[in-house]
Every structure is written in C-alpha cells, then in structure tokens.
Image: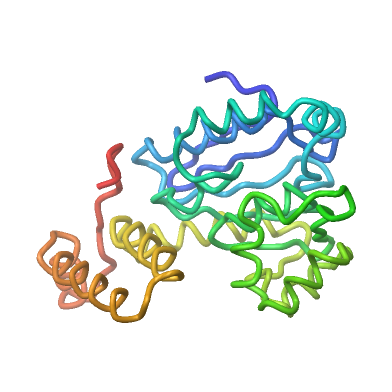
Length: 270
C-alpha cells in the first residue's frame, strides 16, 4: 500500500509507523486513520515484526483531529459514522490496538492532544520524550471523553486524576505524566524512538511472541472480569501453553544456558 499521511518501516523485529503531517503537528484526517489501521494490519501480518512503534515526524506526536476535518465532522458526521460502521468491531478510532496481538508502543515525541492522546492511550506502553506534553482538550471543544478515553485513562492514572485531566483539559508535561502513571518510560528527546525500538528488540530476544499475544489478551480482558473468571481463564490458558512448543523451547534454553529461539507469529496470529 502507498501511504500519504504516514510512513511504515519494518526493520526486523520492529515496525515503525510515523505520522507524517509535520506541518499540522500530525493532526489526522479520515484518510490518516485508514492508513494507520492498514499499516498496523500490515505489521501484524508480517512474521518479521515482534512489536510496533508509533511516533510522529517533526515536533509533534499527534495534535488530534485536523481542524478542517473537525469542522466537517461537526457539520456532518455521516462519513465518520460510515467508516466506523465498516469496522464492525470495537467502537473508537484506535480501539483495535487493544486487540492487536503484537505489542504496540507509543514513542511520544511532542504534543499528544485530543485524538492524539487517545492514540497514545490505546497503545500498550508509552515512552515519552522529555519535551512531550499531553492534553485531553475534548471538553474545551464541547465534546466528551471520546473513543475509549473514559475507560483507559482512569485505569492508568486513577479516577480523580482522570476526571481532572478530562474536565480541566490542562496540558501536562512528560515528567508529570510519568508521575501520574500515564507514561511508563521517560526518555531524552533524541532517544525516545530508539528506546522504544530497543524495547521490542529485547522482547524478540527473550520472550515468546505467542505468549506475548496471549498475555496481552488476558490482561485487557481481565480488566473487566471478576477475579474468579479471570483466574479460571488464565489457568486454562496456562495449561494449554505448557504443552506448546514454545514452553518446551523455553525449558531447553534454561537447561542449556542459552537464549531461547521462539518462532515468530504467523499471519493468523499463531
């Protein structure tokens, strides 16, 4: 696929998706959203890819919805509704990232605002440059906490902090975001992308891609599950994985005092 608003680079074991509208602080349009989803799908289908890193070109991560696109959407939301209906799965512009079987890391290199913050929130981990900043902005535009932000933000920072960030829409810096739990890793401006990519490289050396995918699925699923159901499901998954080749390879690697050699995920997620 030829991309206009993003770039996709695959360097085994990392896929890097760069939002590429730097003159607009990488604000997205409907076309941008379609391209991001297509690039994620391509990375998932590529057996070389263990993890996906999303970042922005220029001085911004993503400023959210492009102003012209926002004006068009508020005047006539039919195009956005039709595009959402075309993906009859989870509502929300980036919610599919929660069900992507490979790790998705946001390398936040600048401002993450509105829908750009949602993009960062729906990633599994957030690495932030020291100059990065975060702002919800929704309520200042007469909107609510959109696209799953009301679900994921309280789970990262707690209810009170989430409501404060959503109600007041104050911009916070990367250090504050780290202290609140919104960001997992704080990096220098020059190192944020490389540190995110290196995290994926380390995973590729040490961890089973199949087990990574199953663990991600269980963690998100169990956020809304009673502990009895969660423990029962985890037990069934564990019993299944004990008999799979990856567990046998992990045991051999331990006995032979070497790094494990796990197979990569195929197109079908196995």
